[in-house]
Image 1 (cartoon, rainbow, N blue to C red):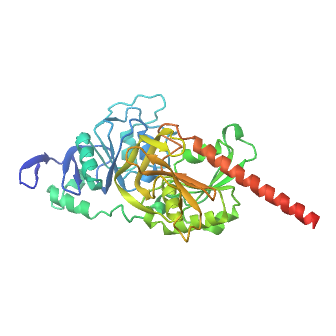
Image 2 (image 1 turned 90 degrees about the vertical axis):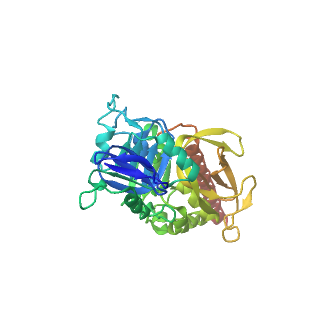
Image 3 (image 1 turned 45 degrees about the horizontal axis):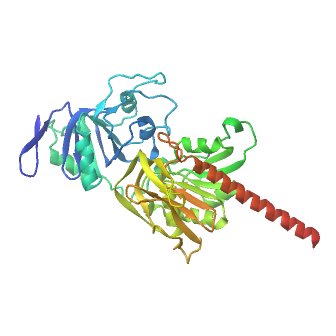
Length: 420
């Protein structure tokens, strides 16, 4: 058993080879029990306030290279199933819970969360004071951390690592600021989602080109159930490849990493806006629209992650409870319509359309002279409230208006040729 010491050389904790140890970049140490796979993981540590939806949460690609803390104390009671995943795998780099459920009790369950974590080699820790941990991160901000268990707790000579050794390992992990991760989580090849529900088997109403920067599976489903044929495209897609699809609209998804590194994606979006395609962006897509318009982005102290985030529409004063998962935000002025800063207001005027009521963070952008808008939160809301699903209808309406304008122009041009 090893004793851990704080800066005053006072013993504060101890651990044994059977424990799991969480070490923060600033030196705080939490000792608990292994949950999931044994081993070592280092990444930025963040927290989510959702009381439900842990399966959808850990399979969200936006959590790539992040250790996730669940603030709700009891996790795992409904097990896991084959229907609720938001992607093909678990993306969290590590998992921190207070009290994992020893039993699975749900008629839809096909396995346990513990077995899923082990099967996908996700290192976790349980039995620690997550309330204390989250209060600390809210106070000082998110940072890098590491979870160590099993053989990862020992040195080559068989002796246990010291807290300082583990902290040194944590400090070698890459920072989230400056990380370009969209290519890690994007699809390798184009995927097509056909219209569903009442539109199944019918001719699509619209074709949507959706750039996969870490897309959640529920997002194309929300479009497909509104009659859209959704083409999910790899992050490396060029404008020429996108244009060859002849889409009615373009969508940029959520995703992980620092939007300030997304130079290629921003350049692609500017070509989309220049071409006049109706555009809708979610989460990272909102940040990329902000950058394409000429605004900056910045890292939040501890981010917004959970399914209870209040957002107010600037024009309507309507408040929606939203699902969010982001650590960066758009730096744009509130309360006024302004000329988009890029290239002498090339894209016309823009308005911050929605704000977060907890901290006035930009939660939506509305272009006033081109057919483009975006939101920082997740209107597909899986898991979470469905207050904002109307935004998919707004995108449908935007594509319909654009299509009608295009058809009218073609008709006028044909008539003009006949009369010439």
